[in-house]
Image 1 (cartoon, one colour):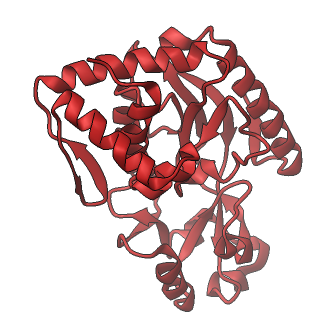
Image 2 (cartoon, one colour):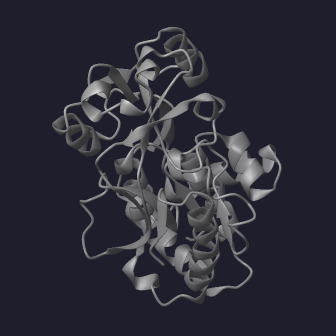
Length: 296
């Protein structure tokens, strides 16, 4: 027995966006409808799901195989039917650049703050819950031929300091060696393991924060004059805008790449998405010369 694409979307968007209310917002339907559809899917496939540490998980049994076949069928429908919306997500750092004037129908960005765990992205894409995601390279290197990673942009990150940081007394004579005397804040513990090792190999002492309210946490770091921070092109948070960019950059190039299943590479919907992203990144490259280069 099958379920409709609308019914299964309620379960999958809840798993992806981590709440029924956000699934309701994304799908533009009421939360009671989301709940009813999830129950129908659960009853149809004889599955149950639970929330563990903020993530929804389905208890696997033989019925989940039929569920995943249905997901793949619905994903193919989303790519083929002009009226159906495709689901896109991105790393938090990249997501701030992909605003609604860039991501247009038939694509829609998830209503979350962005995911930092590449393994979760790969899982969502593998299960056909999302249709594409913008990755942060070099973190995402384990993809097989089932997927294609399309290079979108290459960029650098400068080092930033609070306006009262003692390193600023060195003026334009600041070097990487000087910056290595201070801890460089680089996300929560466990985030970006490959990038972290590369940065540490350059001599930087990384400070890894706790998983807590980022606004509260950064407020505490800013009151301490010891910390330095990476600044990426188009930095959008209040803290990043208030940082002073030092005349040095992290000696590593980063890339954003659009990851999609290889079978959909010839989709006209993908062409439209890439064209919109290309226009956006060219505008960013002219706005932040020397920081970002479009690869499309």
